[in-house]
Amino acid sequence: MVVIGIIGGSGVYSVDFIKNTEKRIVETSYGKSPEIVTGEVEGRKIAFMPRHGEGHSTPPHKINFRANLWALKELGVDRILATTAVGSLNPSVGPGEFVLLDQFIDFTKNRDYTFYEGDERGVVHIDVTNPYCCELRDVLYRKARELEFPVHFSGTYACTEGPRFETAAEIQMLNQLGADVVGMTNVPECVLARELEICYSTISIITNYAAGISENKLTHDEVSEIMDENINKVKKLVFSTIPEIPKKRSCECGSAIEGAKAEV
Image 1 (cartoon, one colour):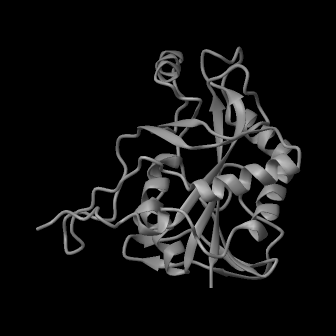
Image 2 (tube, rainbow, N blue to C red):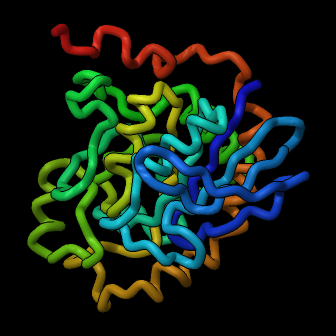
C-alpha cells in the first residue's frame, strides 16, 4: 500500500481533510518524531507531520530531520509532499505565489546530513543531481494550473541555518549564485528523503521579499500573515494532488541508493 507523507512547514500545523485519523509519536534510533496524524484521503493512506512540531515549537536549526524522515519511512511512506515558507529573491515573484523547487544550494552549518555515518550501515555518496521528484512536481504543477493558482514550475532554494533572517549582503550573494527563494528547512530534509528512496517534492509559498529587496523590517508576523491568507490554497492543492499521484512510481527516486554505497 502506497503511503503519502505530508510535511507541513511554517503555518501548516494541521490538515483537516484527512479522514479516519489516528495520532502517534514514533520512536526511532535518532529520537522521537513530532506527533504524526495518519488516516485516509480519497482512499489513499496519509501520514501528516508538522515539521516544527505543535505550534511551531522547534526552530529550524533544532529540527531532528533524521528522526522525522525515519519515522515516516517506518510508517510506510514512499512519497512526500512538503510545504515551506520562503522569501523571494526575485521582485517579479511575489508574496502568495507558489514555487515548485527543482534545485537547492546549501548554506547550513550544524545539521545531521546523512543516515550513513560510516558505522555498520557504511558510507553512501548519494546523487542529488535532481534532488526533487520530477513525477510529483509534474502532478503538483498540473493541479495548481487547473486550480488557477499562481505557480512557478521550477526554482532554486537557498537553505540557510537560521533562525535569524539573512543579511542584505547574503541575499545579494545568493541572488548572484542563482537562487530564487530562501528558507531554513529544506536541507537536509530532501537529501534524507532521497537516502531513504522516498519521492519528495516541495510547495514553496512566497511569504515576503528577502532582506535588501523588501523595504520593510522582516518579521515572522509577516510570514504568518501571508501563510494564513494562503493556507486554504495550500491545503486545496495538496488535497487535489493526492488522488492524482500514480500508485506505481516511474521516477528514479526508488533506486537512489543503487551505486551510491562506498566499497569497503
